[in-house]
Image (cartoon, rainbow, N blue to C red; front, side, top):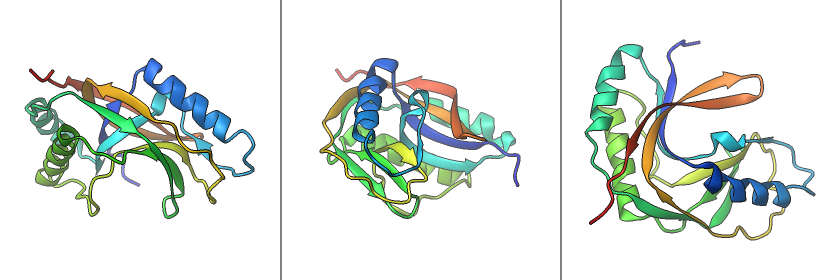
Length: 179
């Protein structure tokens, strides 16, 4: 097993952005017999680009390149709940991808590829994972719309523990406010 950190870029959520999502998830799953591991509230994020195992010597180049990404702040609405069978997860997704989000995700995925890290095979789909290791789709009510403004993007490390992965924020970059 590699001792290289597993990194990814994501949109961090504030406590006030996470609270209604956690309340809805916990209420929606309260009667469900489905098992799975609920993602800890403090670990909720919207994934932008997965980098995978990253050699520590790439850190300066990675941080410097991320610093150079000039992206604009945007609003995002998570308005659907989807079950993804292959990774066995339940996620909130967005039916509309704002152009600044698509541009930011593409820039970060390209950065990953340029550094010889993970190359995404699928098109970008913004998602916020609610539950992992969920073998069956539970019956869920319609997801409400969770709308928030993304003021920054962050680099995270995924650290595996007995309770599953935890995410440590390593760096954060503000997004520009559009004129």
